[in-house]
Amino acid sequence: MTKEKFEEIYRRHYPTMYRLARTILYDADDSKDVVSDIFARLLRGETLPQADKMEGYLMNSVRNQCRDVLRHKTVRECVEKLFSVEIRQDQIVPINDDDRLERLMLFVETELPPLSQQIFRLRFLREMTYEEVADAVGVSRVTVYHHLSQSLARIKEHFEQAR
Image (cartoon, rainbow, N blue to C red; front, side, top):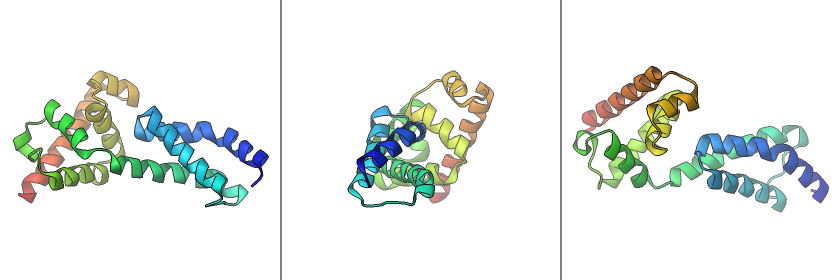
């Protein structure tokens, strides 16, 4: 790939890729790292999709890389925030049980609907108020409360059945 072609792809796709990463990760630095890693692989020639498939390839790469970043985030940090804010520790899982914490995060990521996941992350991981979450997602505070209530009930039910 020529330098000019690479620069054209970079200028054309970087803003969209960054916005997608930022939407998924909620972190500017992590988002920049994800996009930079993808362009570095492209520059090294590790992967070179056809020109007509470039945008799809880049967006899928961002999604996949973001998933990897989220998997590697400190589960303990995220869940401790969740428990300290909204749930008594003894209702679901003890904080020092790494296996159960990983299962909790996996449950949240795989079993909750996308809107509920987004609301859950904004409320517990970004520690936003109900009103801030409602504004960010474009729903009412009642909808935020409804989604969180359902999510927490599903989490509680899941872990009570696992006992």
